[in-house]
Length: 131
Figure 1 (spheres, helix red, strand yellow):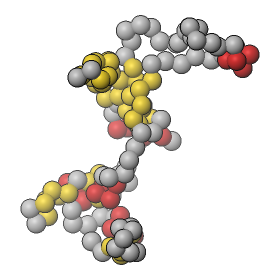
Figure 2 (figure 1 turned 45 degrees about the vertical axis):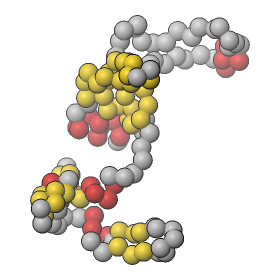
Figure 3 (figure 1 turned 90 degrees about the vertical axis):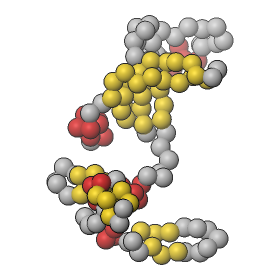
């Protein structure tokens, strides 16, 4: 892999365009004893996903939604109750950067909230949501 260092203090590195395509280490091939995860694109080409493994994403849980007028929104005060479109006990949506990837139920682990996944969206469904 050819990387160019902009500066040692900044630690920024740029990948060359050739690294994004097919080649050794793509699609989960073991090269020199090191497993390199990869993805096969819809066009059948293999992509090396090592380049994005450290990219931060936002994971959020959606309990439900509600629509209201600006008038009603401005009248909200402490103690107000907003009715959501979900039933009590219905699974929550797990979103990654706004795209639903799973559903699950709330759990408590060491005095913190967590989520137990009950259903994971298929890769084809996730791709449809993005488009």
